Length: 311
Ligand code: CP
Image (tube, rainbow, N blue to C red; front, top):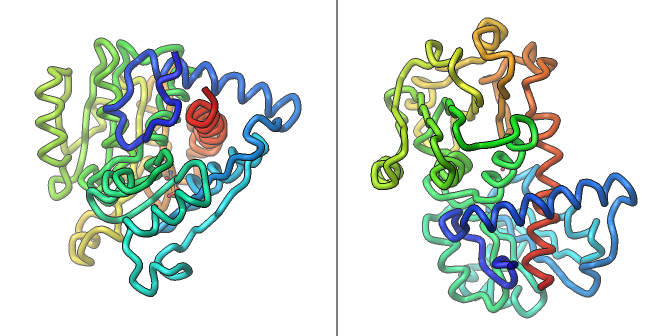
């Protein structure tokens, strides 16, 4: 059953394992479609508005590519705050009313907490969260990360995820951590500089879900046990210059780190990477951030648009 049809995708909370399985099955078929013919016309006559109030390379472009590969049309607005009537003071509520009239699905990235819920309240078409604020979610990135893990390691249940970096301001890992709680026997190790631990509400969420998780400041001893090492960027744009100076470069993954990882493990980063993974690691076969993880962004978003727009 397609529970995505005409639904908003604001939080991973809204989906269950069966929904994710359907999404991933569809993503497999999208991969085959792109490989065999580049795409098809199943979304012909549908329009996607991509309303990005914050910078993006991957999320914006992969959604655009996904829609076009399925024959749909696009309203691509990367730079909402500067280049649209938002610059004249138009509210988010009014903006989504307008773009609901012109399109069939709205993909929105916004810096403010609660903005995606607000958008969904006023939109008359499905809204997809493409990243909300410093402390919100980025659900489609989590779908990509889980799909990538399943494709390479064969499963999620039973795996040990070691997630490192500035987790106080990282919406992709907020969604990933929440999504991981849907799988059985997952171990979640969260290593952060002491100034930027996970948010209290996420800690409470994990406690309530009774998952096996722990917080650390050092991560190297965990490397031999981890199946997935997920590295995050320090989100300079969401903190004071003083805090940034204190924590930048706290964790750098280089060959000395990767040699402690399991042979059968994967290294993920949803990008952009600044300096937290040394370029010498890029050619490691376990490093998937410029390979499967990036490409799967297209297939998963094609699958999501098809499921939302076609019953
Ligand atoms: N992974 C990700 O969200 O990248 P962008 O900020 O470039 O969209």
